[in-house]
Image (cartoon, rainbow, N blue to C red; front, side):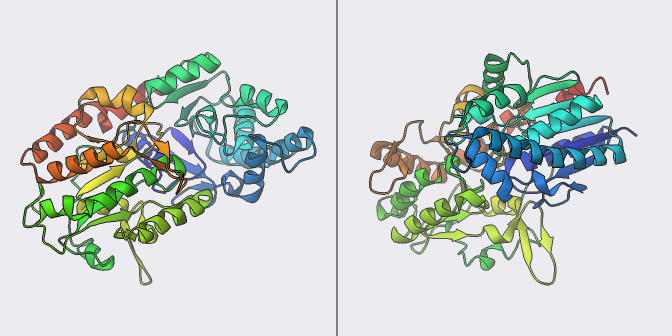
Length: 452
């Protein structure tokens, strides 16, 4: 049996890359491969852990904080580069030990060779791949030059480093991206041709429904059966644009809009009463650097009297049940959601979008660049938040125009009540099934590994 090693900073979480790794591991096992997962600490289900791959470690964060924008904790760029070399050496040594142990026929590398959060890991993998000559595929879900935090190198040495290693050109190393936009960006910058493997989902699996395990979901979070649940399933980071949805939630709970729903039945059969309210479910976890952002979001919700539940501590990638604590799967949240919030400013593709489509839920979506280039043209029915926003001087948050907010609220009410909504959601499902299915992933992965 041929062996595949899949590598990332983390696995087994609810972020998009972790979810895609889980899907690819499953497909590869179905194709007859033995799959091993390698990640940093803080992962669930990894076969091998290299603690120094965790991008939240102090030494990794120090390098990232000084490699971009300004060199603030080093007296010279030489000392920064020495720290990068030192950390890369530690990771490379441990990586070689793991490779010698399992002798993989193929290595899949996710984001390590393209992101800005942990550039020492890129050097480590470059050196090991160059020495081992093991056929490899580097999948780039994000590029450092697309992110405000990472697109400005702090010094010449870092700039030269990034040009050589992030991403690198090596014999036996192929490249993949998850959108046509990313493919064009990579070729323009590095003259690297990459195959496009979009986010996918198994559309043949059982639907995410209310069942014996999650029957206490509403009770657990003190929710009413008549509440209208607005799901935020993404991680909590600034680029997810979560603040854009807050004024919409505030307006939706006004009698002008909520009152239109009283005594009526939604597309999914839920009956709305005069005690019903729109409740915001924050299900995704907050990255370490986004804790202040999360607190600012919660402060806004509380000051504006917007009903919400921060349920992230009881949500995991998979269902968990032990004597001390029960955790619902992120997919259990879709079973109870009435509408999904997806106000991301930037996405590599859009995992939670495809999940909402599979769950047959209406989606409020900000038209981020990849949505425009790779998704919108397929014909999905969505509630658009547009693609323009501005800074609110009072809150420091991004905000949509008042006209857009009013339009979105009207569209939400119309969608929730329309007898045509279920049919439109079924159409969305079929579009995704045709373009982003497990079969699509299997074909593309097979082509990428044809020489193994």
